[in-house]
Length: 89
Image (cartoon, rainbow, N blue to C red; front, side, top):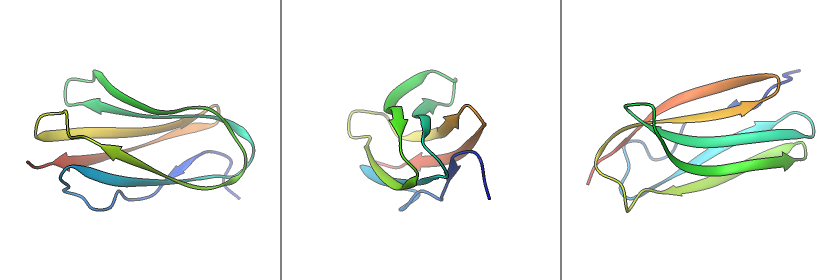
């Protein structure tokens, strides 16, 4: 049984202008879901709160961001998962 947040593949990827980010939480815990640019700067904070055990889906609308590669990071006290997404305008 996983004890940390698990991040599923973004869909669609590449995307324009939004993508769905799905993740599973195995138990009630504080979750941080954020998007970073290629330089490591935070560009969007999607989730930063305590959530109960369940699968979740968040939509990232990147309409105000430039085309390029971004990194989605799902983090809890027990671990972290990162994936690369590509915005193509």
